[in-house]
Amino acid sequence: MNALVNAMRELVTANRILAHEGVLDAYGHITVRHPEDPNKFLMSRSRSPEHVSLADIVTFKLDCTPIDDMGRPLYSERPIHGGIYQARSDVQSVVHNHSYDVIPFSVTKYPLRPLAHVASAIGHEIPVWDIAAKFGDKTNLLVRQMEQGRDLAAKLGQGNVVLMRGHGCAVAGKSLKGAVLTALYLQVNARMVLNAVRMGAKQINYLTKGEIDTWLGDTMRPNFYDRPWEYLTKRAGCDNL
Amino acid sequence: MSDLIKAMREVVIANRILAHEGVLDAYGHVTVRHPDDPGKFLMSRSRSPELVTLSDIITFKLDCTPIDDLGRPMYAERPIHGGIYEARPDVMAVCHNHAYDLIPFGVTKTPLRPIFHVAGCTGAEVPVWDIKTKFGDKTNLLVVNMEQGRDLAKMLGKNTVCLMRGHGCAVAGSSIFETVAASIYTMVNARVLMDAMRLGGEVTYLSPGEVQAQIEVTRGPLAGARAWEYFVRRAGCENL
Image (cartoon, rainbow over all chains, first blue to last red; front, side):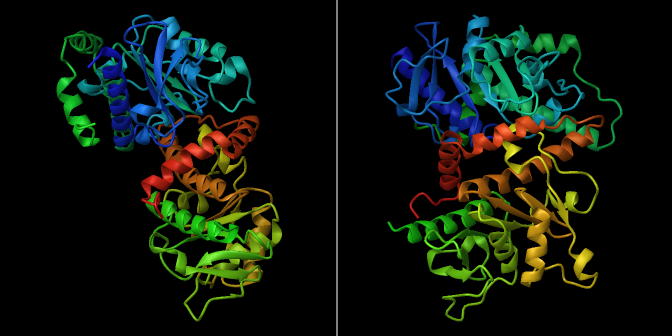
C-alpha cells in the first residue's frame, strides 16, 4: 500500500476512533499532513467523523484551499489545521474537538494539568485562546479565516494542546496516533480533574515537570502507540476497514 | 414523497433521535406544525418516543382537539405544544422533555445560559415558568389545559427554550432540526455548565453577539446537514 493511501486509511480510522470514544460528536475533525508533501494536509469533506470513509478525504494546501474537493461541502474551520501546520513543521496531525469534559476548563480560570501518567502528553501548561480577544465579541466563535487560525497557532506555541474559550480545543501531534491519544487522554484527564474537584479536593497532586518530560520523551519511541492503537481500532470496528 | 408524509417521517425520526441522545426517556414528546395547514400540528399517540412509528402519528388542531385519533390514547400534555403554536407562528416544531441535566436549573436561581458555541442555539435568555404561580400549589405539574399551555407560551415569549419548574422544559424552533439541536445542546450545555461551576470562580458565558451569530450557524445549511445525518444514523433511522 502506498504512503498516501495508508495515510488516508489511518485518517478514516482516527475519525472513527475519536467519534467512538466520545471525543468528537456531530462536529469536530482530525487531519494529517500529506505524507509526500509537507505543504498539504488531508481532511474529510464536511461530514460527522463517525461516518467518514475513504471517499470523503480531500487534499488541502496549508492555506486551506482545496485541491480535489469536486464541489463537495467542506468544513468551515479548516484554518485551525492550516494555521497550525504552517506554524509548526514538527506537527503531523491536528484534532479539533468540543469534548464536553474539556470545555469547562475553557470558560473558567481553573487550570487543566495532567494528573495521570497516560495524559502526560497534554503538556505542562495548557493555554486558553479566546477568539474575542482579537476578533471581537460578535463572532460565531468559529475559526474560519487564516488570520484566526494563525492567531490560534500562536497561542498554542510549542505545546500540544490549546483550549478555545466557549468552544473546545485543538490538539497537535507529532504523529496521527499521537494526536489521537493526546486528544483522548486530554478528555479522560479533564474528567478526572472534575471528579477530584467533586470529591472536595482543595489541592490536586499533579504530575511533576520531570514526570511529564520523561513521558514526552517516551512518546518519541517507535511503536509507542501500537498497543493502544490496535485496541482503539478494534473498539471502533475499524480492524477490517 | 408528499410534504405531509415527509413531515410525519420527520416527527418519527425526531422522536427516535431525542430518545437515543437521552433527551427524552419514557416521557416527553416532539411535534411539528402541519406542513399544509398552519392551524394543525402532528404528534404521536401516547407512546414513549423511542418506540414511535409512522402509524402512531395523529393530527391535532392548535386547541389540541384530535382529528384522526381513532380512539387511541393520547398524551395529556398536548397544550404545551398547542399553546406555543398558537402564540408563535414562526415556530415549526416543539419538544417537551425532562432532561435530567437541566431540571436543576428550573428549581434554583442559577441561570441556564449558553457557555459554548454549539449551545448558542439555546438562546441568550432561558426563562423559568412555575405552574404554581397561576395555577396553585396542588397541581400534578402537568400542562393539561389550554389556559396552562398559553400561560407557558407567554413565559417562553420570543425565546427558544423555557424551563418548567420541577418538571422539565419546552423547546420551540423554526424547523425540526433547530428544535432537535436546541433540545440536545441545551441539555449538553447544562451538563458542561454544572461542571464549570464545580470548578469554582467566574464562568465566561457566550456574549449576546456570539449567541446571535451561533443561532445563524444553526439555521445555516452546513451545520444542519452534517449534524442531521449524524443524529439520524446514530438513532438507526437512516432507512426508516
